[in-house]
Each structure stands twice: as structure tokens, then as C-alpha cells.
Amino acid sequence: MNNSQLFKGLVTSFADPFVVGVPGEPHSCQVTNRTSDCIYLDCESGEDGGLQQIFQLEVMSTDSDKFIANLTSRSSPNFIVCSLPPKESFILVVYAVNSKGRSKQVALHSSTLAGPAKEKGMFKSYDLIFFI
Image (tube, rainbow, N blue to C red):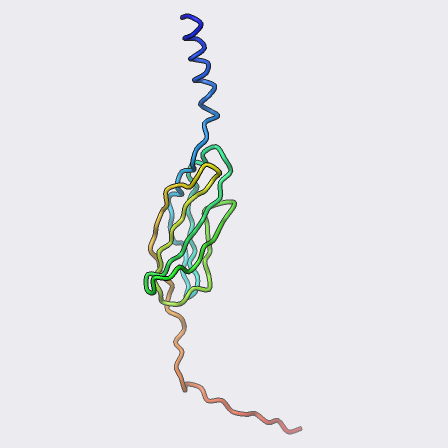
């Protein structure tokens, strides 16, 4: 082995740990709970690309084609989205971001549950007057 072959081997073995890139996409995503106004989403982190990463969740309504929410998590790809309309369908898009770029996105469909029934005229209002 000559010196140039030895040098190439050293450069290859020492350079690999310093390779940085875009993060891997979150995986194993699942909706873990739903209410009439909240959706709970839990995912596992992908590779961080050798850099600090953050996680983004975008929520779009499939019923009204509106953008509903954009949430950021600095620690893990786990989100609780509340103040959503009841009995509506959504597309949840989650991805990771670092200083080198954005991961592939993961999309899931979910919906909120029906809210409590509200009937007009079910209760009458009365003025209460107390005499002492």
C-alpha cells in the first residue's frame, strides 16, 4: 500500500461521521386520540441529518379545503391540535426541518368526532326573581 492509498483510506474513514444533510421523515405516525375539537398525533423521529431538527405539522380541512393550523415542535414529532370544528375531516402533514432542508412529508387522514347535540328551543330561559 502506497501513501496515496493510505491517505484515501484515512480521509474516507474520518469524513463519514461529519456528513450532514436533510433530516429523515418522521415515521410510525398514528392518531392516538380524537375528540370533538382535538386530534392527537404521535410519530417517531427519523434521522436528524447530523444537525438539530424541528418538526412541523400542517392541518388542512378536506371538507372546506382550508388551511387550519401550522404547529412546530422542537423536541419530538408529537402534536395535539385543538380548537378544530367537530365532525370534520382533515389531512395532517408532518415533516422535519434542519438547516440543510426539509424531510419528505408524511400525510395522514383523520377527523374530529361529532360534538354534543345542540337543539334550538330545547331549554327555555326564565327570569328568576328572588325575594328576601
